[in-house]
Length: 168
Image 1 (spheres, rainbow, N blue to C red):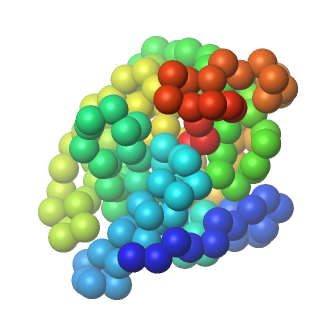
Image 2 (cartoon, one colour):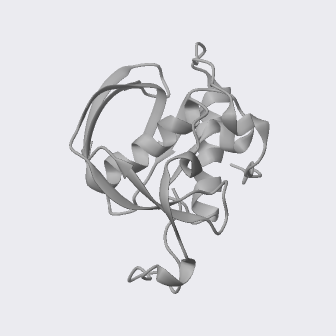
């Protein structure tokens, strides 16, 4: 596995719609492994392929709470519900945090790294992270959804963090 360079705003790669994955091979597995390694090294909870320079519909979410890592290939949102406003950050926007309104619930159909189909339902912060990453695959950036910019000094450190908030 390798730690990849994270593409930062204002790169035009971040605003392009990604292509559907059609080939499920070792190259895709390596991309997923490298994306995970990159996300962990950057202290993120999610990452999408365009954030590492690949315009493919591939994203990962890992809240690190003992849950399994969510690998989404060709994800499609099939249902949403509710609404909540919470603070988000993004690995492609270092130091930028903002209040973003997103659905509280999401249902997604996606494929595993081997191409098999699955359905996933998520709520609260997990749903937020999933939707944030799927937005990346559509070229939609979180800064376009910010209602209010949040100063990093307003963030409460998580119990296992010394400073700042998590970045999606």
